[in-house]
Length: 418
View 1: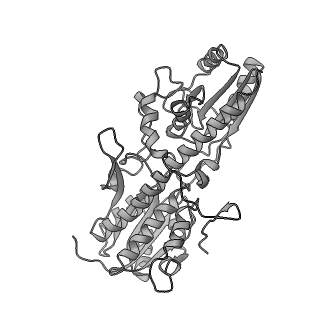
View 2: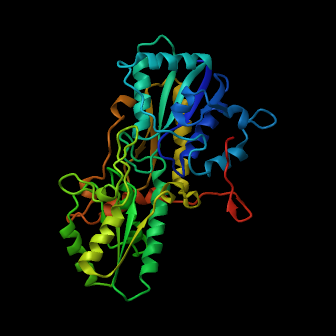
View 3: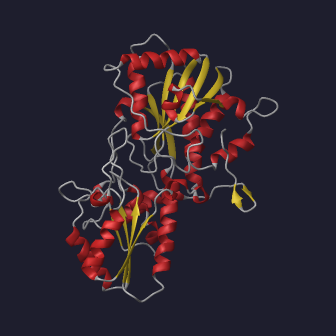
């Protein structure tokens, strides 16, 4: 174990929220209380690194202390089951250290002001970019502190880990909702096509999870189209014609990021063209574009459904497995940092064997930041219009168990950090 580094810690949440991101925050908070001999106070950044720069901080040690100064586990329980990012989020892209050292000098000055010796950032690909850049700069600084990335993203596209916290709960919601849509659509004999648009810019993991109902109850969608395979409109029409030979009501899942062979997004005509701080286009309209195309081709009843925000905030359908693993990632990050780790991200490693088991490790952040982990081609069928049973069995363990939610007057109780 490295020499004890005594001081304060700060934690932030960044990027798109999930139903499990606060479970990870709860793990960090629990770890801070467990290591109170070295971490005197845990601050929460309001709106990620952007909020820290603006000195918008919450005293999490004070908020989660009971009357005896111990961890208030009742509050922590409610926080764990609260969706979205309790500390708020941001999408701020940091400059490269070599191009703007003054930015990082000011950042170090703030760390010194609040005696920050531990920095935890919960997020996905772009958040790990922040961790990587801060790690890079600290190698040139004489200020000693430890920096840890903690994984989070419903897209499940973060490299260096078997899967990401947040994905299991989103997958559970998508599979459940898709199964319900299929049941609803099956009540009529009129020819109809229902197209369900699912999140996923570069990776189709969420759309793949929509097929879980086929594995469990035999009531899933007819086809699934992922960004990993080029989309072809003629093949899409041929698939629909083939499905109509079996039954009149067709349900299809599509990733928002599916593209034609020339690289154009299928929904590009319905998009604003705007981009975020990291240069990512805001995607929407894929389902609607395909709705119009199917209507023109077949003249039948067609509807498109965009699952939108509920995919990442439906905590009432959270996976208990996901919440538990998310909490463990946060706690592991704290334990690892106190033991001397820095410039790392917590990684979940799936053990070999039929029984689902994980171990937790730390991986060098430089090897993870800005990499995209796609759905393997062998997880997609030869025709490119569905996923394999092997893929579904890989996802299935991640959606197991139901959250132990606290209710009040019929609604789930949420914890709001003021």
